[in-house]
Length: 550
Ligand code: FBP
Image 1: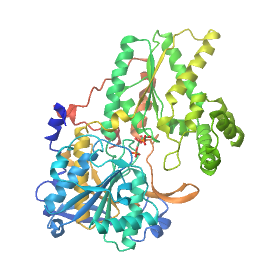
Image 2: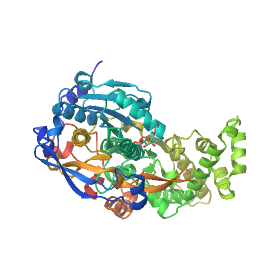
Image 3: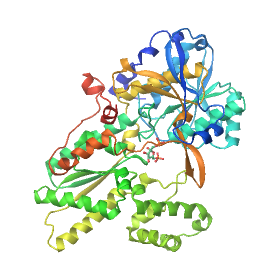
Image 4: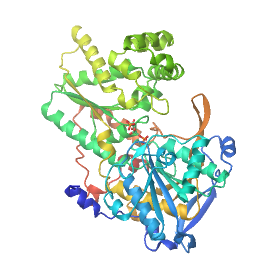
């Protein structure tokens, strides 16, 4: 394989660890804090998780730890969408395991959680791992979206782990995968299977965070990658002065990515889905708010600008949310019949007949291509795949229509020419920033200490992340502590509470206090490419979200 110059340089990068994890590994001892409670629904969760509920927060301190040197085998699985830094979680875990006992083994399950069920795995060796250190992607073992949630699957996991002599599983995933990790940990204890389960917070979306998990890994690199691209487009817009750029940004549900990128690049408009939902804005009101800025800028002679749109927006617009939920139910309940409808005309006619009056009206008023996208295959959770809905094009079309209407009435005399973009996959496999490289390596290393200390049903945590790594604090958080009950497919299910953008939080308030100025004046900032080498203020900065939140 031919390596780029940066790839070669990154192989040699030594990620930074929190001070407690440096030096002799057998002197890292577990220190248990107070018992914990879940965020909500305490009684119900206590009953659902009799073995793992209420465990104390785990901290580390210096002292003798005789179990660290035991020979163990750990299985690792990458779950869900790629996020920069996954390879470093595995590197940190591997190095810690081998430091504990060179005879210990790391088994990587291939292609995500499905790899455990299908018993597809490889042993990760030092030579193999060296090709992946400090690089982006999940290609070291691959990822997948198979959900581990049924008892038969849990039993298969036990059989496979016993056959492979695996003592613990590390699940690197988002809120759903870690929820399932908690269920697995509970089941293993109930069955006395002797297998521990530890989770690691992964997702570029940034929505797996709480009082103890300050950020999920990958958010830092992905938002820096998108911000670089947005900054470049802003500069192009400023130079050519002829296009309005509509940029959709990944993030399945929450708008953390769009908000962070807005704070980094100061676009003319950034829509935040959580605000749209809170104000119960209709699609037309969102379009009007964009048209307002386009007109004022046109009056100033500025027929150009940049609009950021979060990927999940469509599901936060109340009328669209209702439509999507009705579509999800209709398609799930009538899949067999629906599959017999061969043309789009037949499908949309049947859909229109079965939707409520309001939703049918909304559906019919959408352009044909958006209707088609709303009817595409659901993801394994039964949800519409928002990354495939071209919201940016929908908004452009609607803005164009409004502006021509205004023009015909003599109320708008500008020129509106647009470009659309979608930044998502571009950021998920970038070389991890120094922040993500260090954070992920620390999470992997921490996971081993939790496993070796006999804990299960915990998520690895590294805190104080807005400070340099010299001040980072490692430990573990019982996953049940992050849970509540939510309605899923008509049933109350225990799940990790998703963190949406808080409208009274500092990142949003900071954005809201400046956006009017950004809308009309040229306030663009150009973050440039991620820097891996150079002064700390250029290459070791955490996200604005993290700094503002802490
Ligand atoms: P995770 O929640 O698994 O981390 O994935 C996040 C994400 O990147 C979303 O931002 C996006 O909507 C989705 O994955 C895209 O999924 P896919 O890779 O299946 O196209």
